[in-house]
Length: 122
Image (cartoon, rainbow, N blue to C red; front, side):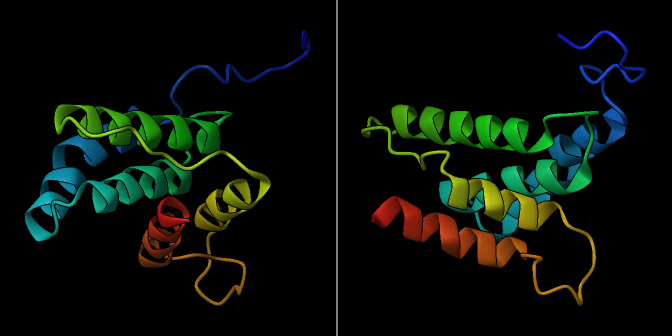
């Protein structure tokens, strides 16, 4: 257990980032493409990129996106299918979180959507 940590990593760094996701980004994206998988990729990429929490942004992105995906599948009376949190998936979430358009290690939301779609059809 860490006792010398100065940052309270359970708190929001910036609650406005999550509010923006819920109040502005998701409604806009839903008007453009309301497929469950696209919205899942939006949720995961926004949380991973915006670093709203002191720690655990990629884990939070994964869990939030997977819970959203499963809930939507249950509402449609479908079997729940979701991506496993593998090393490769974690690397993709890291690539989403990296800033900089010239860096070959970065990943766009669209690329992440394609990756997610491929993972769910494997």
